[in-house]
Length: 193
Image (cartoon, rainbow, N blue to C red):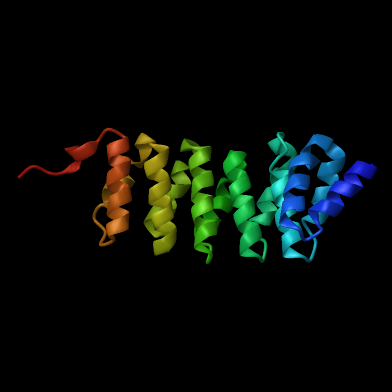
């Protein structure tokens, strides 16, 4: 228990190098460390919450940490939301899809991009929700959705990607075209005269 207390003290000391070492070691202590981190992710200090999420990301059993990562996607701090989305990139789980879809509209563009990356990691199970965002989301959320669809390479996305080619956004057209190319559709999507 002394080692756990010492590592938690290091994690919360305010020195990034020491906190990083502690974050890497805490998962090796198992369930006791996980419980300690679940307390720390509610700390008033943003850095403590951030480092706690980073340490939780080091645990291998997603079932034990998923609820904490999902809750952190709604943290008031953009940095903590980013850490949670990054952790979900390393621990993709279909249960995270609804909250990651919501995070595509985050005011913090890095959080939205990391949420999109996590959805890419989850894969084709996220396609229906991403297509919904593509048809009715904000412009920035739609850009992240089309990027994710391009990378997931699910054939169910072809009609949505083709529709995205009709927008005025050069970025939207780029990702839609890349997605169609990734799916092997390539230039077959133009209508002959």
